[in-house]
Image (cartoon, rainbow, N blue to C red):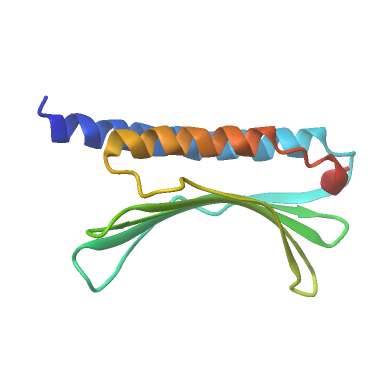
Length: 140
């Protein structure tokens, strides 16, 4: 397989793993919560958005966990692709019913990943950081 094809497959596999990793992470947090604390869990993706510019697109995936305490936990991975560079953000936030948001985690690479392989590595690092996040003070 051509190098470009291999990179595309590696990126597709990484995005698939990220999707199921986010679901597993939200499910684990949901299962660790006190009985009756979680009202529902909802998938927020994956979703691709394309701009009017042919060299830009974005990918977003995540999970929403609605708590009985009128708080909502959002776990999200966003990647913006463009000709000038690829940017990525992995975030976990809590929002109350008044719209106030507190970020618990906002992480991504320090510099634009230069290749698909670099992006795959950075996706894995961000998911690892999310998995190490302790939500016991929020969902317990």
